[in-house]
Image (cartoon, rainbow, N blue to C red):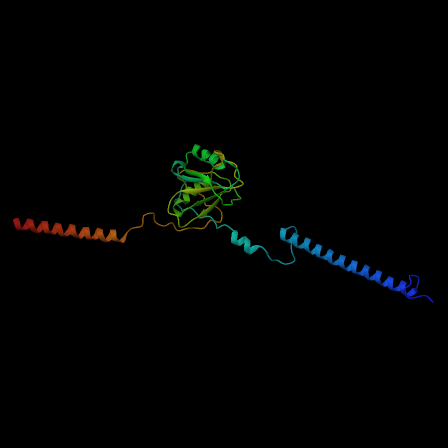
Length: 237
């Protein structure tokens, strides 16, 4: 009579067969789970990258994109016309790793007559051609500069009171637009950029109420002096 633990016994062979089948099932199950996870990962990445459309109309990155979306450019005033180049003051900044980019742009602007005040580097990421930063009193100047650059972004700083335009050169900047393609007509209103928004431009020199009061007091004094002079003339007569 053979022992159950002997290799040639039927019980031993059956037990070995069960162990082998269990290992096969475990391998199949584990492989199926890994394959499903890999397919889910590829599917999710395809939706995230936009390669395929997802089953739900949900913009997973909409909040982040909206937070980074630039504000629309300001509209020029109805009477704003191109500014004479020599009357436009610029600060030019290089935001890229390309050495000498701001200096080259400064020379190009200077050749066209623009007044360049400062040339420097700036650690601000600009992926497009350029970004123009300016205050409400420099909207016409900014539009005049924007015509020199292909695809420049206009960013209004409502707290600024000067008329200087900051030009932040970006990764896509190569050179200024050729003069023959610039569509600026002197003494004709500027064409507003698409999706621009109207802005209220504050007065450059707001009137001081004290000055108005002083002016009325001066007028009263003058009237009083004039009346006094008339009374003196009548008395002498």
